[in-house]
Amino acid sequence: MKFDPRLVTTKAELRAAVAELRAARRTIGLVPTMGALHRGHTSLVEASRARCTATVATIFVNPTQFGPNEDYARYPRTLEADLAMLSAAGADLVFAPSRDEVYGPRHSTYCIVERASEPLEGRVRPTHFRGVATVVLKLLNLVTPQVAFFGQKDYQQTLVIRRMVEDLDVPVEIVVCATIREPDGLAMSSRNAYLSADERRRATALYRTLRLGQDLFDQATMKPQAIVDEMRAVIEAEGEVEIDYLVLADPESLEPVRELQRDTVALVAARVGKTRLIDNMIYSRRMKAEG
Ligand code: AMP
Image (tube, rainbow, N blue to C red; front, top):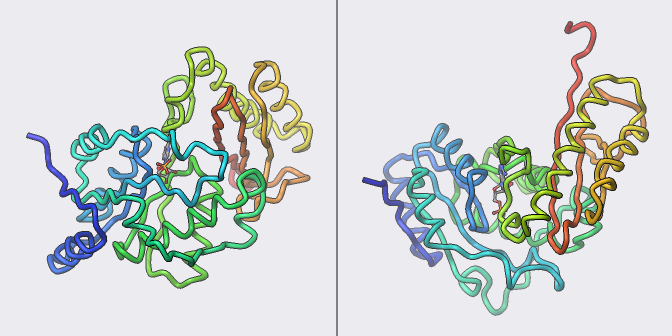
């Protein structure tokens, strides 16, 4: 028989359920999601179960992180299937609130993480990380987990959340889990459901370009800008895939790198038809002394 997580929809129920877990001395892991779950999400639940003795998953399509012309209204909402997946993955408690439950009518406070929020995604989606940081801070305050789990898939988001937690002294450990991919390399994403069969095929260009970048980085014979040019060519050859950005950046500052450095993150965002996809890969070079 499947393990049944408890479903709560109000903040009061959530706080009461969390109090029970705390009274039972459980170590709480938090997995925030927007639902339309896939194996990327359940990998976070598994990571939480490996570290913690109670896992709280949240399902909330957060309106404040969507821009006015983005896909808030049509974002996939699949609560029944999500609950079945969380049940199979072994979550203990699921918080799936309504919009009004999370944001009261007089809500007017937002968490702005300067600098980390500004480049890349921040330039294309200027209010996105304000919404992300605000909702994550609210969830951390409601659930008071010891550990919270996020995917590397949203690399800049992990930097924003780490900075917020450090700057605001939030007593939680942030764990970042590897990106889960389809067999052909496409990073799993709830937005992949928007892709037509043809777009789905083109979408693999993001992974292919990141792999090419990895090879060129490992060869260490080209400057970053030349590598980026080769990477762009992979996507441009695909046609009908519009690049928003494609950079080799410093993993902490997200500043584009001018010379090859030991650790570099490649980040790409592109539109395939109407669907905007992001992906990234961390390139790490062993120094000669390490063999
Ligand atoms: P979302 O529902 O898209 O807001 O994602 C919720 C959490 O799942 C975030 O921490 C994401 O980074 C993470 N996530 C989404 N897709 C993946 C993936 N393919 N692999 C690992 N984590 C993911």
